[in-house]
Length: 127
Ligand code: FES
Image (cartoon, rainbow, N blue to C red; front, top):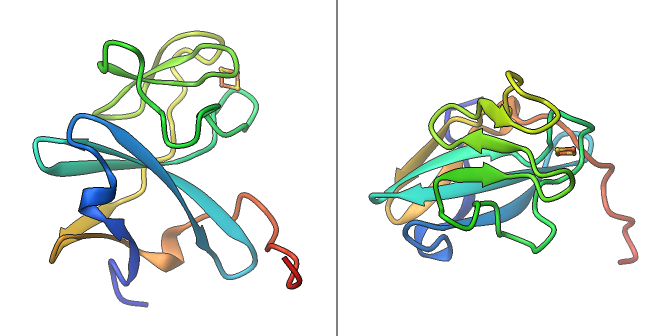
């Protein structure tokens, strides 16, 4: 499958200096992805903490620490570097978030469908 073939969101859905979260369908379920926007570019990670695999955002889309310098897992307070997803404080120090390669094109953020892991089962059809 072609690279960057799946539109994740509009760039404007992620505030400059801030973050947002999105869910995309995979071949056999769904994947949550966090998007951090800085200086017009984006950094994306799978929304799953390497500690015990929970989503990081207790408040949907809020992934950054109060000072905006790190990604924060709100479950047990782990802090991660924005640039490379390295955990620098908390119960999973030296582990990494799973990076998701992304491209900003025509005002939208695109990812590669084939590269996305499945985190959750598909939604029931009647929801
Ligand atoms: S689940 Fe993220 S720090 Fe424990």
